[in-house]
Length: 134
Image 1 (cartoon, helix red, strand yellow):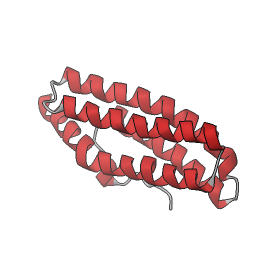
Image 2 (cartoon, helix red, strand yellow):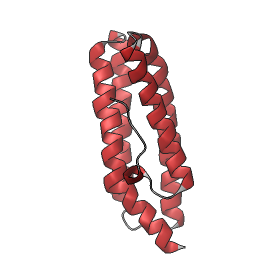
Image 3 (cartoon, rainbow, N blue to C red):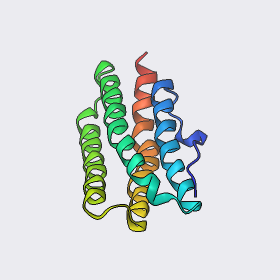
Image 4 (cartoon, rainbow, N blue to C red):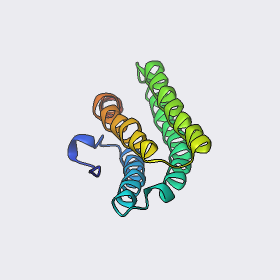
């Protein structure tokens, strides 16, 4: 299964949507590598990218929330921090155990699945607030 950026995942904010696309492309590249039997080789590269890019993306989202005085920014930031912790834990496990099929599954579920849910539930509210604040 690959992740498709469908209309229900678009926030309407070009910066945020482009960054979401980059995250999904990285996860999809890993899943594609898995389908070709090369997932373990791709896992370290993908996790290194995701760990740094997620931090950058969340900074951008949080800056937009601050600029527009998003009323739920503190709770939203806590969600980001929890997600970064999950990604960090997967990276630490990867360093301890090396690339495994189980870790690829965790990336798919805990990183990709979380991202879809977060965009639909949380980022959509932020995007609506940003749009209404203009």
